[in-house]
Length: 126
Image (cartoon, rainbow, N blue to C red; front, side, top):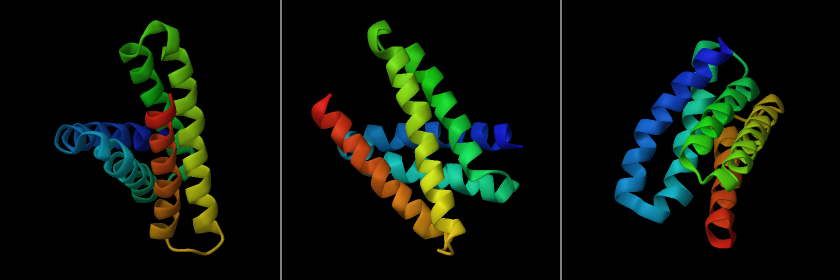
């Protein structure tokens, strides 16, 4: 089930991210894309009843494959590794936040904040 949740979140994120990036450009990458991805990953896991961290990990693999296919060869594999590790970390943050008793939206919010900061850093420094 975790693979299905990861695929669903990947497809939904791809669709909504295309819209956000088209209309919002760099602000979309820093603000909208992280909330889209954190929401779709977490909600897919919860609705299907599977692991949040696992869903985020599968999503990271899917994004990693996208990175390998669409990035220059020199950085594609590193972008893929960063996708897998970062999305797994965002999932861990979300799950830990929920497990210590905070509502789901706080887990998503905290993961969004860290993801947004990560995207800002990457776009400004790399």
